[in-house]
Amino acid sequence: MEEYFMNTRNLFQKKTSTKAILASTIGTTLEFYDFALFGFLAPIFSVHFFPSQNPFFSTLYGYTAFLIGYLFKPVGAVLWGQIGDKRGRRVALCSSLYFMGFSTLLIGILPTYARIGILAPLLLLLARIIQGLSQGGELAGGLLFALEHTPTKHKGFAGGIFNGICTSGILLGSLAGYLCTLSRAPMWAWRIPFLLGFSVILLGVYIRRNTTETPIFESIKKEEIPKLPLYHGIKTEYQQFIGMLFITGLPAVAFHMNFIYLPMYFKELPGITEQLARLSSTIGLSYLILLLPIFGYLSDKFGQATIMKLGASLIFVWSLFLFSQLDSFSANKLWAGYFIFATGLAMFNGPWCTFASEIFHKKHRYSCIGTANTIGGALFGGTAPLVGALLLKLEHGLTFLSIYIALWGILGYFSVNKLQHLQTQNYKINWEKKSHEYNAEFS
Image (cartoon, one colour):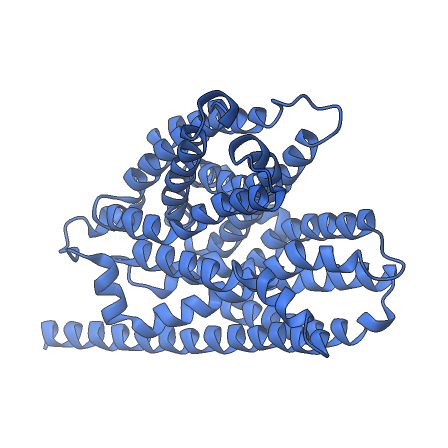
């Protein structure tokens, strides 16, 4: 433990690394913040921007606006990835934050349907599209900006800190959404979190503009960068790209299923109240945030792939054990389940940032990581609550749901193992190539 805190002090004593982590986390934290906030406030948007005589359709339109942001994230990942690989990580991150700031401010000041009619929902949808585009490149750009400024021996720890700070945005968004929906809150209270988010974005723009470009991008500026980095990356490293889809899919499915969908199911069980279900989910999320830097630090000692495979194994075992107990569920099992799950997810996600940043070649890693992450998150994570609801409608639905999450544990394990093997092969090939060039030069 003493060594862990020494590692923390050493990392943050390095001014450049500290500034880079701060600059990178601001935009990505706001992405997670917006995810939780807009989802929590969707019923309010339904009333103010999509009024209908049928409340069901109002609610449906509100959640559709939330979904639209998700659908445009892969497009944003391609756009900002192209800029990040061609013109620099800092340029991409600054420009994406400008668009995020504009869309967040627009939502905060947007007149409602009662004031400007049909223009209100159209502008809200436009803001969500811009948010989706700007968020698409934030995670990949943020983690690369942080890690490419960090010394090799601290990369896992820095990645865990980055992931932990960004995930805390979900807690902040949930808290802000909860305060806005209190009975004593004024009707316009929902605007305050977006306006506060815009003020934080202004700070983020200032910090990013005054942070230097990453040393790795500076080193490749003189080299020939592919005209279309994403196409080049998928063509030359298609196995890595496919593997990264599943590696991002495991935490996305596990997170959405356990923190978004299952609390609504748990509250229907005997002896489990809605307050207990939400409280255990929130504390489990807090526990996850605290563990992410710890397992990031351990990955520097034992290897990212090793810790991630242990995490995938724990999620696999947990899913089989926990769901076999649901027929005799209790509050103690609920708490134990969330703590076990949070530990497994932290083991997988803590080293994820560093592992992903080292899988792809530096000439196209921004495009490949961003696109794989957004597609995997939307395709697998975004559909997880729907899959959970459909499976539980079947006879023996809990068994099927257990198997579904367990299968993702297996996919995550073998995807990490495959990419670890490819990475080892690439290192061996590069080492042999350099040795051959060296021998040829001095022979």
